[in-house]
Image (cartoon, rainbow, N blue to C red):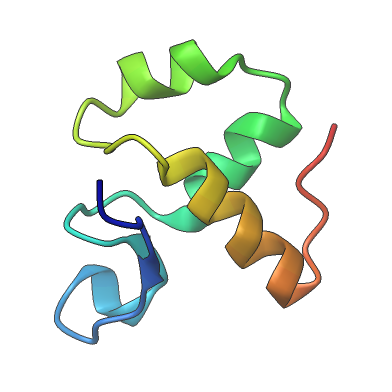
Length: 70
């Protein structure tokens, strides 16, 4: 299994950080986590997310100094 990353591509979602290979913003995942949504709910809501996407978004948030916990 390859490692999932958060990437910023100017041609995808105006360059906002997304889960690689998707159009799901890392910030969207962080907002959902902060709101208390369970991980399975997030995967159901964003069906293109690969395994490891939540961890990648958390890593991105921590590196950016963004509080992701509720």
